[in-house]
Amino acid sequence: MSTEGKGGNNKKPILKGYTLKELKDFFSSIDEKRFRGEQIFNWLYGHLIDSYDEMQNVPKVLRQKLTELTGVIDTLKLISIKESPQTGTKKYLFETLDGYKIESVLIPELKRTTLCISTQVGCPLDCKFCATGLMGFKRNLTAGEIFDQYKFVTKDLEEGAIKNIVYMGMGEPLLNYDETLKSLEIFSHDLTKGIKLKRITVSTVGIAPKIIELADSGLRVKLAFSLHSCFEDIRSKLIPINDKYSLRENLQAIRYYTKQTRTRITFEYVMISGINDREEDFKELVKLCKSMPCKINVIPFNSLEHINPTGFSAELQPSPYERIEAFVQALRDQNIVVTVRYTQGEDIAAACGQLAILEDEEEKPIKKK
Ligand code: SF4
Image (cartoon, rainbow, N blue to C red; front, side, top):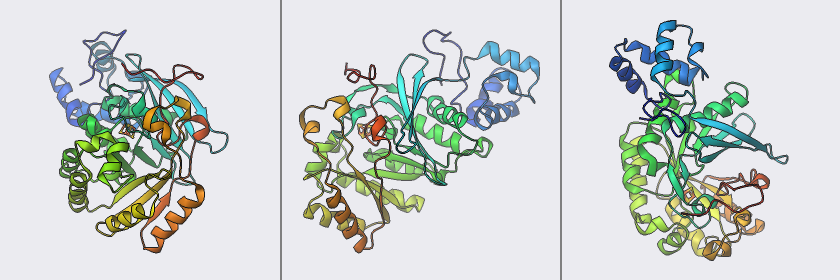
């Protein structure tokens, strides 16, 4: 459970991020009625309160007790919002209580505005097409910090404007499994009035045992898998964790997931010139897609120039536009469902795979420790 970070009293628990059961247990532990847990849950996650004083159905004396016993209400501070003049995409920069920076991205689309949230500060996985991976890993986010990205963005918009949440920002959600699961539980609870699970997508590069755990959790959340190549060797070059959890093992886990949850998987496919846009890539992809309920989300590769990549990352180039169009059409001709996520927010480095905290606007990302 979270406690207040740097600059605060680190003995005080922070309630943001507690599940309903944890809140009820908390009230039992301070000799209060368990139903108070439900009330506080509703105020924290449904009404998005900034202060305990806003909780009208809670006696003043209890509000005072909570103020004394617990830490801050918000786990993040909103630092800045950048908006793309081209697409309206917004990038929100936050600071955690212990001074780390994280980002969320709002992708406006008619009737289906999507919020892309982070689950870690940086990422330990070093995928070669991803700016976040290149900035290294600091720590996991708490469920409260995952939720507060939604809170602040919601407060910047009209209520109910966010229709979908995707766990595709900084970090690998399944490496922060427990807090990710808690946040899903919070988002999807009726008292939150938030986002139904069928509108939430967790995206993973493939932590096979955790995919199975998620399948068995009972939460029927949508799953997206960063496929990017059907060949183990190429995939390992792009996504080094593939050496530990191979594509084969992940596909077995995904098959289990689709059966258990009766959902279809989304395969994310970033198109990189000469790496995964060849005839043999196409053929393998078709074979795979015909073997399970799925759709493909094709993503034109977004430039990493803003972080001065080196090594293999520096060699990666986007597939030409005509190649992407032909690839997509050929997949559709095979009756495969394909969506194309055309670049949203590249001009503010908010597009897919571009999130990385810069020391300032002109400089390089925070260096790996
Ligand atoms: S693609 Fe995802 S898992 Fe890979 S480095 Fe980037 S944030 Fe981490």
